[in-house]
Length: 266
Length: 243
Image 1: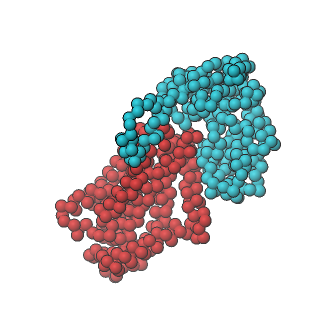
Image 2: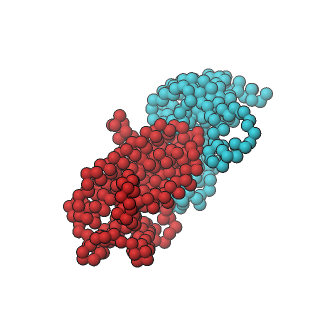
Image 3: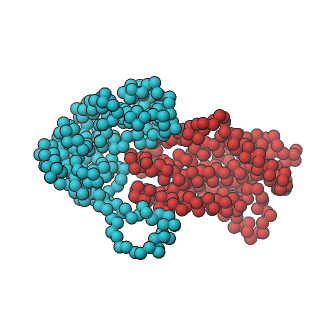
């Protein structure tokens, strides 16, 4: 069973890489700067956010480099937001393909999550520069041994996003309105995730509730390492892995159960 | 090689019209009409195809020919019944699936090739053959949105026919491009057929069917009318149609 899945994956990995390359080429086709935008866009967005939140609103979090605090939250949240949103419509927009040749349908949401994932990895470069070069002497971040654990959070975040992407793309086939509804959900989600504020400003009761937010788990994991030079708590580890694996499994089951029906509804 | 057993395919044509809030809302106030929206595209179709056979499928528009091909090639799952296929299928149901108009011909060869399930190595090996057959060498780096429809069809045909599949599924694609290319594509098809490929072939041209096929399946309203020798079925079909 597992072997069959891996073989299938291998067989279609070329198609997937072609589709990701297509996304890159089409996205930057007519722009002067081309792929440079992949790097420039997040940098500029970060600069705007940094300006707004740390200079205009004077947000800060005690004892840490606020700019880094903000950016970690932003980068992770933006990845999830963009990847899940594009994955959601991926099955619908590729209907002409699904209707003509046999292709395993999971490829569409998965390749979108990977495509946005590559962009995400690129944004880590400016993030690293901010980590190393900004902050006062007291709050300057130190690269430490725990950095080696950060990929765990990223993998869990990716699995979580793919799982949600599977579920959303399935729903979108049967219920087109989700495309609009999800935009609103994401706006709400932005404010309910401690991206630019710290959990400690909330009442204690609410804090517990906010910690259930999967994105908080991923963001907190990375922040604990980068800002506080500490090993994330056991609960945080468990939270990341649980949400990642759980969402991925549910997503796979939902998608697999419904994929044969897609063709009648699109 | 291919065995189709009691395949029934039902579409619910009503479903498509009811997938947004607005429409559901409006429908609530409309007079309820009890309409049976089930559309039966195929009814209890069974047949077998042996290795090396060339089977033609005829029938008027909407008889279920394309649906049958899609079921055999795995694009759709039948509502009822079973389909068993042994061997690598090359479906040429609609050419150019996955072409991206923004990309160049070169990029599309790889993209479309990947969609058809070719490996990277295979495509790199056969790249020159594809280009040569398509006669589009000087337009390789032009985005295909600037191509004429004939050029796109030629490119698509060249990519699709570069393989030597065990089973070939063809839906009306022999009339592609200009006269010269049509002749070329017909020869290519003949060459594949002579190579021992099993072929399922849909066409409205009885001449082509008579020239290429051993046996013919005649579909009408989703049901098999006749299966048998090419000349007998074609004559019967022609007489019935022209009556």
